[in-house]
Length: 209
Image (cartoon, rainbow, N blue to C red):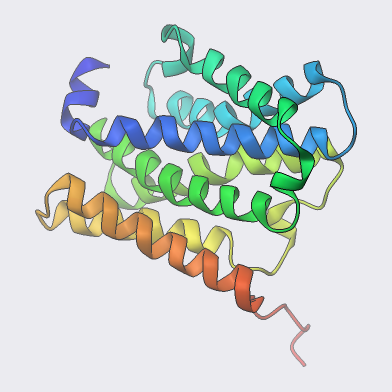
């Protein structure tokens, strides 16, 4: 594990914590918005914040980081506390969407970077970035009884794929990891932001008509 983290560079693990915190916030908000208890909000925060990274680590043969780290699960619970004690009006409107967009960009980059650091080939590494960023949101939506992000035409998974693939390309091209991460994260966030503001979506299947 330590070798993989060293290969990722000193900056990239902070992207992991950022993505975890932001996705945990969206999970807690999903529960709070349905007038659930704090226990439910904390559970949603943990599942949403850690779900994608857990699946990624199991698939690439890495230790599941949050299980061995003393503060990561506590970070999710702390985020749930913040959501729970702050006024609901702070999070009304598009606050949820913007937090989710930031988490999507950060986690897409980190997931791809960690996969590369553990010797995963480029295309699967990019897919691990998408899985890392999207699996937690899918679990959140399923638990909340909402249509999964996979079943919506909006640019969501596409934005994650842009961040993950761009990071892989730039990192393999020799760009410094910090620069590659920033460019890839900004690109993915920009696409997701455009989708939020202008309602951009992919064309739906029309049955060959």
